[in-house]
Amino acid sequence: MLAGMGLFLFGQNGIPALGGVVMDPDEVEWASVRDYTGAEFDADFDARKDDEILIDIEVRELSGQQSVSGVWQQNFDGRSWVMHRGLTSSEFGDKWVEYNDEGHRLIDQESYVLGSARYYAGIWIENPEGYAWASYRNLTHSSISAYSELLADEYILVDFDAYAMGKATRHAGGWVENDKGLEWMLRRDLTSAEFSDDFSAYQDLYRIHDIESYQVDGEQRYAAIWIKT
Image (tube, rainbow, N blue to C red):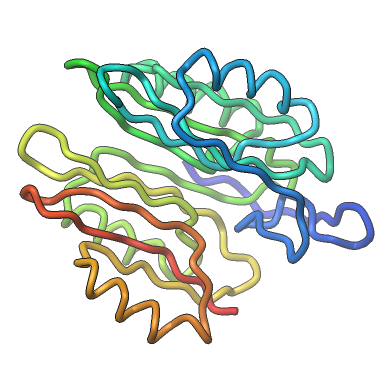
């Protein structure tokens, strides 16, 4: 669903607040946690949630158990936000509608398998700026390409996910209104060598906003969203 346009907010000392479309001010306190059990992550989540905001979540099965990782950032402007994991596809769709109707936008989504069941996770933040946004999941290779082409002129891709679904690879993406006209590109399905070549070619002009590692036909592949500095 697409919404209207709004203002760009600033937080303490003139630093852009979390409402910036890519949520990466020049100076920000941050933290990351890796391979926590579900209970460990929940305890850490409760300790951080009042002063920080979770901007990325990764869930996988490790030795038969749920393993959760995340990246946190200082919540400059006290913006409301919410995270859910362990959702079915239907439940995720219900949350999408609920939080969109309440004036939030999706900034990160995750699809993962525990045992034989597929689950979804998502992070939504308050959207007082009224940024237009869109997100899709379980897309084929051609569908993610089509949406990227359709939205490229007015939106910036801020979240990309790729995952195996049966024998196929599926993709998810989140786009936000590109009100600052940031130049960006998505490079995907790269081998390790190709990703290294990209890094050498683009590191002086672009920064990596989002990176993804996944398998296609049993081969490891990499994707990254690059934003021009």
